[in-house]
Image (tube, rainbow, N blue to C red):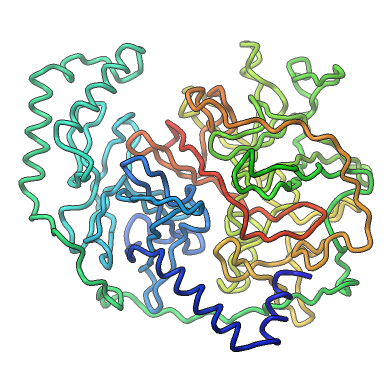
Length: 583
């Protein structure tokens, strides 16, 4: 019985009891909210893909981040009646219940870029942030830039004060954990380390003299002195958002799509009950003690399929990895989230299936995996092989709204349906772009991907989600991902109302021991490499204050296993932002 069905039974049994539960849940949620911030998207970030904006927050005191970059918990809500105004309730804790003293924020628009690191305090609750025309340098790499952000009613907060690698003092906001001296000394320490390493752009000793130090401190003090006095207490929280410009127009609420799937038991739509696996493919066994390894992982895996470009299979075969049996890797499969991954690049050898004369590859990733990358199975342990490496973009798989299937559904439903899961779907190459790897400086080809729903038992594909007879989409609740509605796979019962009902799925496939968190000093999460050789992200992310955020497209996880589980229990491991990325 599905979670949705269980709730229905409870409601039918006792409306009074369910009302009490709802009240308790609402109260608990409210108790975890520090306050609400707003974002005006007018300007360079206006027109984000599907009007999707995120509010990434973290604490300068080391308390961590609210949630991983551009994941569902950070998605902002559009304020009713305002096309360009979005809100975000700032939680006190992260998904693990740990307190996060967030005082830095980056606002980003899907496909439109992001703001610079922006300071905020309790006085900003109820206030609106907006983007300025001012371009700021990345402190670590001045070739990287981002737009400044400010608050309408808190001019003392805004772009975080920093000193760039060119010696430029910029920004307006200083954190409670900082002083002009601490900011300056941190810059000098970083710059001197860069000089010692021979880092590009770190070659001017005049920037770290005693005279330069005092000049930086004086400039920062001047910035602080020019600001109004900071409030000593948090203002009263408004019950409505601040008044907005009159030129903003009111948008109509979309028509709601059906919320109940039409498939029960024997599927009249033609979908197959259970999981999208060929008859001879075994599932990885459930991890017996996931909490001991990952702290909250449900222990299950997702399967992803890939249609590889012909040149990946036929070119430079001598440079490819070999498995334990001496057989050549045709395709590599790499998954990662934060510093946790499935080993050094190129990851693991992808499985292969033949369906109606066509070859497809597949890989299993644990349900907490944030991103996957397909590659041609070539590492760079042999230096001359480095130039032969080919790979897809960083494909995010932790948000059901960020993929090509979701784009189709979103547009056709006028925004009523948020996303589509790509678990069990087929990725294929849609274009090839040349990018500069932000970590290595190398120019390389990156293969961008789109998705198709896929039936690995027949080879059938489609880009249309399951529909009712009236042409409306069949949907399921997306509460586990922070969305209202998700469209449904047309081939398989991926909402897990029943899982492999009446079907015996073998789970005796041996699973290689999943690796522990990689050593962060090895440059993990470099878009698919623990040795700094992965491709730079190609979808518009910027590096901010030495922290890089990932804006790659992708989709959310749906549990892959032979038993039902509560998706809300999945704990996502926060991604470690890369040191450098294409602006």
